[in-house]
Image (tube, rainbow, N blue to C red; front, side):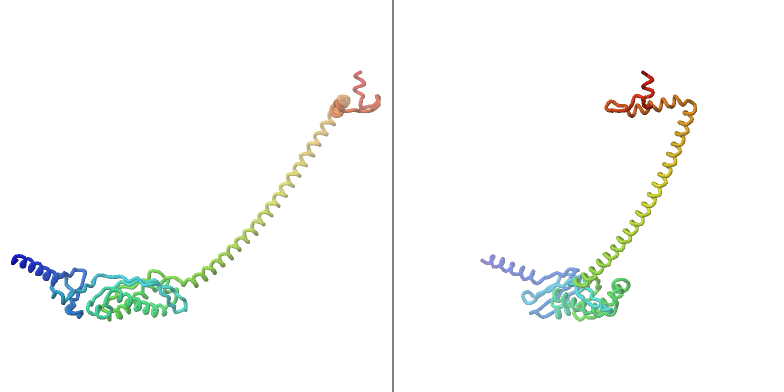
Length: 283
C-alpha cells in the first residue's frame, strides 16, 4: 500500500513539474499570464518555469509576417479611380502592447488593413495617375510604409514594408476604356481597309491600262507583220506569174479544183467554162 502511494505521488510530482516548465523558441516571444493578467514578458529563447494551474503562457511570433489586404478603391489627384491590391510585411515588436490592444494576429491584420488603406488613400490622392503607374510608385510606397509604421507602433507592431501587387481600374471604368479602345482600333482598321481598296483600284486601273497598251501594240505589230507578209506573198506570186504565166495559171486552177471539187460537191456549169479549161484539155 505504501509502495502504491509513493508511485502515485511520483506521478503527480512529474505532472506538476512538467506543467510548470515551458520552452520559448528563438522564433517566439512569450507572455506569462496569471489569472488572465500579464505577469512577465519573455523575449529570449530558453527553458522557463511557471506556477501550474495559476499561470499560463501565450506565445507570439517574432518573425516577419505578411498581411495580404483585399483590393481597395482610391482616387488620384486627377480624379481617376484606381483599384489597389497591396500587401504588408510586419513584425510584433512589443508583445505586451500587442496583447493588450489587438489580442492576436487576426485583430492585428484588421487594424493594419485600416491603417494602410488610410495612408494609401491620403498619399495616392496627392499624385496623378501617370505618376503612380510609372515614376513615383517607390517613393509613394516608402511614404506609406513610414506613416503606417508610426500608427502601427500603438499596437506593438512594426511595419517593415508596404507594397502594391497590382493596380487596376475599376471594372466599369475598365470596360468603358476597353470599348473606346476597340472603337478606335475599328476606326483605324476601316481607314486601312479603305486606303487598301483605293490603292488596289489604282493598281488595277494601271494594270488594265498597261494591258490595253500592250494588246494594241501587239495588234499593231501583228498587222504590220501580216501586211509585210501579204506584200511579200503578192510579190512572189507576181514574180512567178511573170516568169511562167501558164504554169502559174495551172497551179491556181489546181488549187481551185482542190478547194471546190469535193466528193459531196455538185457544180452546174457549161462545158466551155474557163474553170474547166484544164480538165477539158486532159480529155
